Length: 393
Image (cartoon, rainbow, N blue to C red; front, side, top):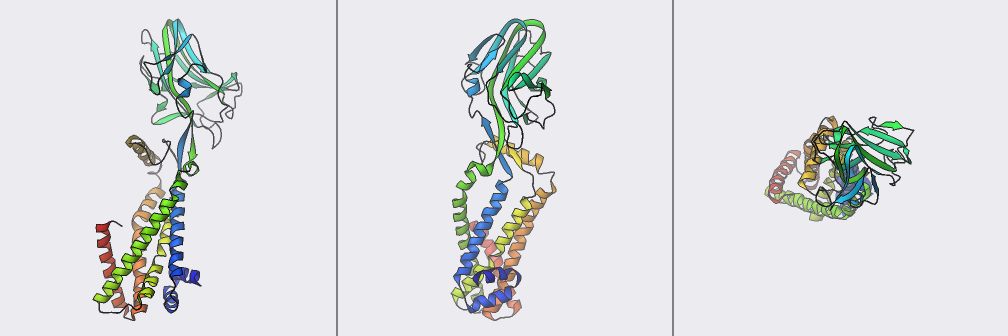
C-alpha cells in the first residue's frame, strides 16, 4: 500500500525504497505533500493557540463621548478641548467642595469572573485642584446590581501625583485588574463578579476647594483566543499554497541537483520518474520536524497580548508583544528549548536525515558503493545549501 510505504521510509527505508523502485507511484509523493500541509497547519494552530488578543467593551470611546450615562456630584459636561481619545472627555466640576465623584450605574451586566470574563478596566483620569493639593483619598467602585453592593479599590496608584495631568490605569506595564483573582478589591454587601453593572470614581480632600475630574477612554477588557477571531482561518489557504509551492520547489531542486551530481560522478540514476518519486519520499521527514516543533511549542504558557489583532499594526504594539514574551517566556526553559531545538537542532537533524535517506536511495537506484552514494548525497547537500542561500528558500 502507498500509505504503508510512505511511513515505512521513516523506520525501514531500505525495504520501503525497494518496494517503491519495483512499483513507482506518484500517489506516495502526493500523500506526503498532504501530510506536510496538515502538519504545518497543525504546527501553526499550536502556535496560534498560545496567543490571546484583547477585546474591549465598548469597541470605541462611546462611554466618554456622551454625558447621558453619567451622574456626578455637581456640573457635568463634555470637554472638547482636553481629551485623550475621540472628540471629548467627560468632566465634572465642584466649587468649594471637599469631594468629587462621577459614576455610571446602567452598564452591562458584565461578567468579570472565570476564564472568559473581563479581566481589566482601562481609563484615563485627570484631577484638578485649585492649589494643586493631592487627594487624601481616591477610590474606584464597581457596582454589582445595585449601588449598595460593590467592590472598592484604592485608586491612589492609578492617578497622577500632580494636578492637571492625565494618567491612565496602566501601572508597571499592567492595566488595572478586575475579577476574583485580584485580592486588592474590598467587598461591600457581597457583590458578585459575574454581574458588574456600574462604576464610580471618587476623590476626597480635607480642605474645601474648586475641584475638577475628567475621565476618558473608559472600557472593560478581556482576552479572547486568537483562534476564535477568524484571522487564523483566513490565512490557512495562503499557508497551504505556500507550503505546496515550497515543497515542489525543494523537491525539484533536491532531485535536480542529485541527478546532475550523479552525472558528474559518471553514474546512472535510472528512470527519471522513479528517481523523482524516490526523492519525493525523502521529504516525509518534514512531517516529523513539524510535529516535534509543535510538541515543543505546546509546553509554553499562553500570552494575553496587548493588541486587538495580529500581526501587530504598529511598531509600538510589536514592541509591547516582544516585551511580554521576554517577561513570560524567557524565564521558561521550554522557550529556550523550543528555540534551540526547532530553530537549530531539529532543522539540522532534518537535513542530516534527508541526506541519509538520499544515500540509501542513490545506493539502490544506481547500484553503487555506499561510499560513493554518500559522496554524491553530501555534495548535493552542499550545493543545495549554497543555492538556497542565494535564492532564499
